[in-house]
Image (cartoon, rainbow, N blue to C red):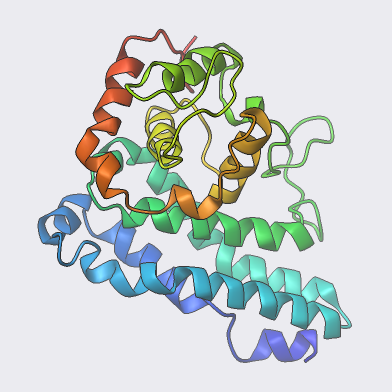
Length: 262
């Protein structure tokens, strides 16, 4: 398949599903979703999007690698991908950040689940076609690339002074997840999902794909071995234990700055 054939025809895997989800999610109110969400049908009209998201993303990645391996002109592919995907993806990310507080209150959260795959799709595109390529250079200071992944756990945070108070929450929950040396001592890795979600909702850490959170947490917390899938599961026992409320309560007692703090 040549670049021109890709450009003219067909479609990219996951393109329709992502566009459809983003259109529905940003056009309908979060309250509308919440009214229809039940224990029997938690994701209501987003069920198909959530259930197919992982497979669609894997298909997209495989398709992109295949197309690039056979292409003559990569520039046309990059232009096509960016025009098809990035405007909608960037629109969703901005919408999510603007509504993150309301979203964080949901019992069942398709918006959070889909954010991971949406951001991952963007990063997969930018891995091959950075924003500085082909006349689309974004000005981000002295040679700094935009939208690059953080390399260190500390870079997840908007403010450096928020790192230790945020980490200390994991020591202070009813069943501590780490010791004083930041070594994992817990028995339920799902705690990290609630901890990360609270920090994101409060604009303490930046939004990234789950695999970035998992990778950097594993590097920072010795012995953790967190899989990204563990940041998307539903944990009945943890839900019933009130862990989210515990984290929020401890968080409220901390003096954290966050994205807009001084």
